Image (cartoon, rainbow, N blue to C red):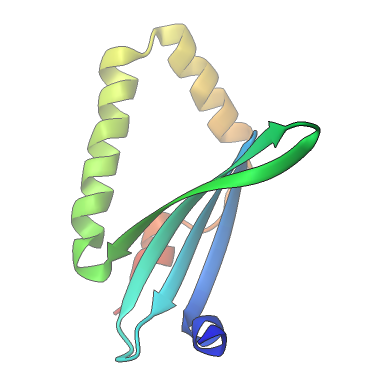
Length: 111
C-alpha cells in the first residue's frame, strides 16, 4: 500500500508560515484522475518535546475553479472591507518581499 502512495503523488509544494507549514500536494487516483490535498501542519510543544497536529482538505479537479474563485473573493473582501489602510499596506509590503514561485494558473491547471 505504501508503494502505491508514493506513486500517486505527482507534485508537492511547501509554504512555511511561522509555526505552521502548509503542503499543497497533487496526487493521482488509480484511474489517473488528479486531486489536490492541502495540509496544515502545526508544531505543538509539550513537556520539552514537540509533535505535529495536521489537518487535511481534499480538493478534486472539478472543484478547482470554484475553490479558487471563492478563496479570491474572500481575500478581496478581507483586503477591501476589513483591513485598515495601514494593515493592508503592511500586508502588501510583505507580499512584495516574499520570494515568488509559479502562479496559481501555472500550477493548478491540468489540461
